[in-house]
Length: 183
Image 1 (cartoon, helix red, strand yellow):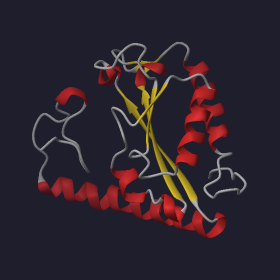
Image 2: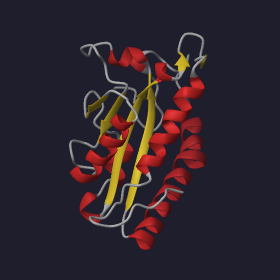
Image 3: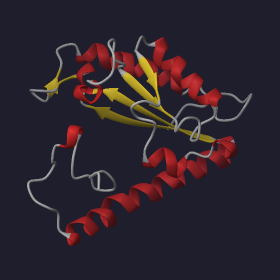
């Protein structure tokens, strides 16, 4: 078992999250209290967007430690876009997301080393106009990973991300439709 999943037990390079195994009762409590309500709400929001706008785009964001990219050639990407190699979002939507990311000056790589995880697999249905793109961001863009605190230039990063979000809200889930701001 890799230790990833609903309740991960390891992080980057196999480092343990917990000092001892989690009890079954604690795992079930977390699933009942957090995982199920989150996915119920997410499904409801996607359904609502589809009823209202004819489709949905979900941007699933993650933060990866810098060392998760250590095996890649330099210059390393700052953001990895995962769409399960086209399985969770149409090429049109993935290309528009990639263009938005690059438009803010971020170095981008697609589907490697992260092609998308549970959210992209569970919710991405591009043939039904439900597009899910995972954006995995290098944590060192905004955080001193050793000290676990924001970098001195955090405000500049936050402004870039705000502009990226504004660009993403212009992407439409349906061919030829108008972009709609995300809620």
